[in-house]
Length: 193
Length: 193
DNA sequence: TAATTCGTTGTACACTCGTACCACTAACCT
DNA sequence: AGGTTAGTGGTACGAGTGTACAACGAATTA
Image (cartoon, rainbow over all chains, first blue to last red; front, side, top):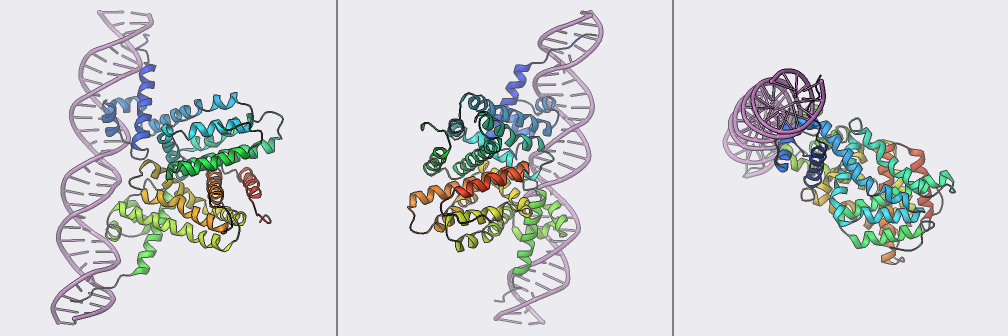
């Protein structure tokens, strides 16, 4: 037996990130091998060989997108004490203008997953649970679990709803005003950003 | 000059509704002439002749979907006095299990529109404004406009976020619990449903 | 009756899609 | 050197796409 050429993990990550960037920019529902490969400057077969099939590529894209969003927020939430601070940090991150396109992809996947649950079941399983756990933890062990879950659910829903509004209308003034009012209503907030 | 055969408005509405039903059931991003026509029991050319092009058909579907959602809520909101009652009525309607698929389509279009604003600009323009106007009006003329807008924005965001959660997780108990807490926090609410 | 428009269908064309197959180079181990 | 796997690319095939064109009966008015 002789082992073959080692896997170039750097190249794989670079390729996957490039695919995610392309998907963020050009949309999720229209991605196809040839235009994607042309945009990345590679051959379509390179992508096919790398990801196996289109469905597998989309799975990889979703996994990487989840990584991007979570690594920017999860550790952040873990450090902050209190629900209000965590919620404010999450809102500041997710509503940043330079992330608009990324969350456009997020909601595009979300909507599509709702109409194809069998294909995107993994996404749907995590899309709420990830944040729910973080936001429940952020409230500390002293809060009644039912209350903590209720508050975390509300924070997730409100922030995502506000983000949907912001992305659709671009009316940052109105949405930010509503966000401030919501964040100020949370228990244990100290001071605005 | 001789006028031709009159337009069969009944047939047209029936056809459009059938297309919307199909789209609700089988998804928005995969609709194509032939399977759609087969599902409706007609020829593909019937649909092409009726709608002109696929893009025009999608526009018509979005318009009809908006009609369905608004006629179930807008007149409803107009009758009720007070923000709390209007919000509760809206939540009861939108979270009903038999509407899950319809709002699955709603969010699928929403997400896709965020990634293709030039194509779905009309949708994005109305998706918040429609409800915003209704919910501001529901608060009566005595509320400060800035406050009314802030509250309406928050109600829309929270209800849509909760609906997203409900559709993704199916965890009605947790989501309904959070919804009750939110609705109870609104000014002027009288009694739960 | 003649003219005109609507509703419906069949056929065909150019195009894109995902993917399988083959070939070649590069990098590693025995 | 020989064997094995990764990375990349070229070609081709079958299927499905949107849509244009032509045709025919039905329903209306001049």
